[in-house]
Structures are given as structure tokens and as C-alpha cells.
Image (cartoon, rainbow, N blue to C red; front, top):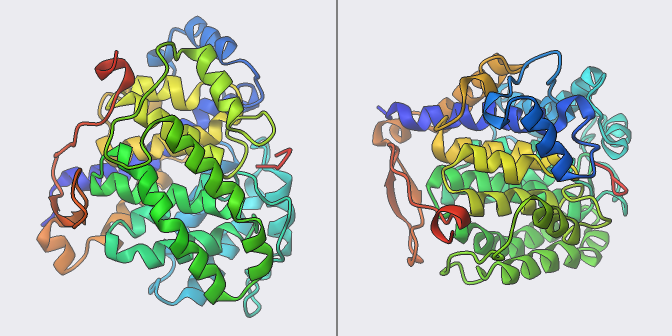
Length: 402
């Protein structure tokens, strides 16, 4: 039987995604704040990051968590996730249901308009037309649980298909739905214990497979391929900046990379000046935070959640990936015990674990993963094993819509 550690990581991935969302959102006031310094100052006035009590009424979750739960619960309602038509119908239904729970949660206009177009009762009613303005982060911020459902390397084709199809139910543009692919893929890497500095290379190796999927699927192929390059080029540039293109080196950060410097960098990689608002930069900023935080939850909060821009959408991903790797390590109880929808998030984590680790898989208590310096896969124990991660501080000191 699998050890409790991997189950805790599944639960923590879902719960801490909600924490990252609620903390970054702060009932809308921090999501719309254009100064990371002002956010950090207010956090200090509230007693410091460690003392923040994330609960209603001051810390509701945003549309990010509502729709992330919608994705997870669609899997929970589908007996056979190989039946893609039924699965995608359930996902579309859950997204439409989720739109009835958006009061005060600031859903993006692209998501709202697209959900209105979904007709899950019809054949392929989950498909919507290509949208040249569909490159926002709304697909990325709800896709992490797909990586919990498909954490193994031999499940990559399912992860690609589901992240793309669920993503383009609202954001039918490669910059949008490829953000969903990145969010799901990085979650699977976290469960695999894949070193964080290798995730970017893994994404670049996966993009050709995603492109092939789009071509074979046959839905709006030419429109998608025409706009494909933006996401891929943005990530190539980022990986070069951090010196991790090869996946064999630790990331390089500037000697000064505090709140002000991070805000400036996040803005520089954005589409229109709002870091995290698009499909390419929301997972990129969360990834940058993971690269620089190691196993420190508080550092993840500083880098991946409390910054200017769309910080709830970067926070929902950074929180999920941290939980998938470390469980609740170093997370204050006041950050998650009274989180809105905590029980639903916990249940989703437990159910996704059972769906993925059942039968022979559960008895083996292992998953395949890739380790540093190896091209082949090998078995990693589902225990408390933690592969040391790069930490800058510790070791090296919708204009597009949501």
C-alpha cells in the first residue's frame, strides 16, 4: 500500500493552490495592486506573511479556485477518463456551473463569454471557435489537477489532450491553452520529484507533441499553428535568461532580486505589462518562484504570490506545485485550515490520488520519474524523498483577459 506521503502531497497540491489564489487575490485588492512593495508593506502591517489568517470574509478564493475545482470534480464524476467525449462534456458542464458562483470572484471576460458558448449536451458542444484574443491565463490557472490525474511519463498523451481541450473550451488560442499544458505538466513533474530546473526543458520537449496533437485533432489547425510561436519563443527566452535551457545547470538569478526587481522582471516577460495575466507568463512567474524558493513556503509566498500583476493566478499554480512536492511542509495552519472550500479541495486531492494510484499501481508504491543527468526513466519511491532544489537565497545567496 502506498505510503501516506504521496497522498498528503495530492491533498496539499489542491489545498495550497486555493491558498495561493486567496492570498494573491485578497478579495480583489491585491490582485489589482500595481506595486509588490505596497502589497508586502500591507502584509507586514497585518502581522507578516506567517500570521495571515486565510479565511472568509477577507480572503475568499477567486474564479481560479472555483474553476480549478470544476476541472478536478469533472474527473471525479467520470468513471472512465479514457472516454474523452464524456470527460470533456463533464468538464464543460462544470465550467458552466462554476460561472454561477462568481459573485465577487472577478472572472475574466474571455472565460465568461466562452462558457456561455459551451453546449455540453450537444455532440462536441465543448468546442468553441478560435479566438485571436484568447491568450489570457484563464486556462492555465485551472489545469494543475490534470497533472495529478496523469503524473506518470507514460500518461503524457492524456495530459496533453486533456489540458489542451479543457483549455480551449474558454481560451482557444495557443498562448492560452498551452499555459494550461504547462500548468498540468509541471504538476506531474512535481509528483515525479523531477528537479525543478529540468521542468522548462521538459516543457520545450513536450510542445512538438502538443503541436502534433493539434494537427491530428483537426479543429482550427491553421489558426492555431499561425499563432503558435509566441508561447514557445517566450519560454525559450526565459530559459536562456535563467541559464536552464539544457536542464543540466542550476538557475542563475540577478545579484539583486528583491521585490522591486521581481516586479520589473515579471512585467518584462508579460504581454502587456501585467505579469501573470497571460497563458505564457502566469506559469512562467510561478515557475520562477519555484526555482528560487526551494522548500520554503514563505519564500514561495514572497515570490510567486505577493507581487504586482495577476498574482492570484500565479499563486494558484505556485501553491499547487509546492504542495505537490513538499506537502504542507512549513505552511502555517492559519494559511489553510479555514480556507474557503478547503473540504472540497481536500476531497478532490484524495479522489485524484485514488484514481491514479489504484490496483497494482497502489501496491507498487512507486512512479516513474526522471532524475538529474539521466535521459532514461527510473523508479522513485512514493515516500518523503525530496530531491534538493535550486534556491537562489539559500544556495546562491486580460488586456488579454484572465
